[in-house]
Length: 185
Image 1 (cartoon, rainbow, N blue to C red):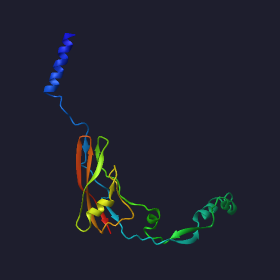
Image 2: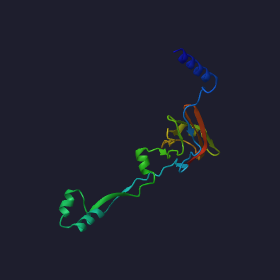
Image 3: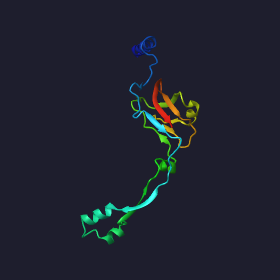
Image 4: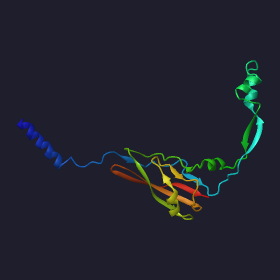
């Protein structure tokens, strides 16, 4: 028993004197961090031209009749809700659906960030030579996977904005500078 106590004291003393020190747990790697694509265009003026309705032939109707005329009769297709013509929307503006649903402008998530969870991401810096960085700060959000979001409705001035991020977890903090560009036009 006496030997065990002496051994315990020696191990404790050895830890205090040499190898037992605070070691940061985990890891955080951002060397390969990047976006694909690394640019997002955000519009100030949307093309919300409403679509026009147009009646056109329904190719499915004719394919089914041709494929198996004994089984697919016009009466059966009508019961199934498949008709010779269909009404489609044509000529809608490029941003019509986005405006209808209020869909924000969203980037792809960042790739190449690895580390001990939980990894937190925040905007480190926004640079611009032609816009207003303070306005971009008001509207720009970044989520945990590095996805950027700008709301559909905003008053960010036209310009080119270069974004830098900071990633952190327990014991580590690393910056990824100038990793994403937002063009407001």
